[in-house]
Amino acid sequence: ALGKGSELEKAFATAALVYNNSADPEGKLSKAETKSLLQTQFWAFIQGQENKPKYQEIISDLDEESENKIDFEDFMILLVSLTLMSDLLQEIKNMKATK
Figure 1 (cartoon, rainbow, N blue to C red):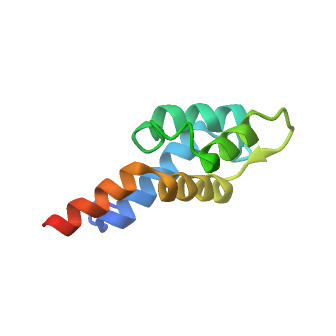
Figure 2: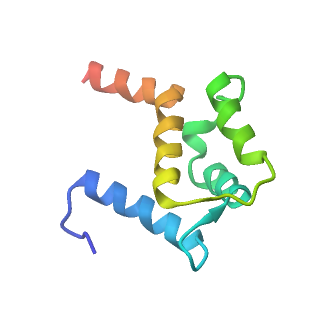
């Protein structure tokens, strides 16, 4: 759909596609499905972050047994939160600085 879109547009379109391919007919994910999706599709950003309090807070919230499901907006907030605390983000920033 975004063959001629910008890199940023393609990135968000990909995130939406990955989410939608996993979501239920109502467009939502269970917390367990969300955790699994993050672990398989967002691994580079979350690996090595297990000891960080923010990571533990996010994951423990997903581990809670709850009927609450995650919608796309909440999923994107999770992605941004995990990205901001990730060591990989700092590596990406450092790469730009050295160009």
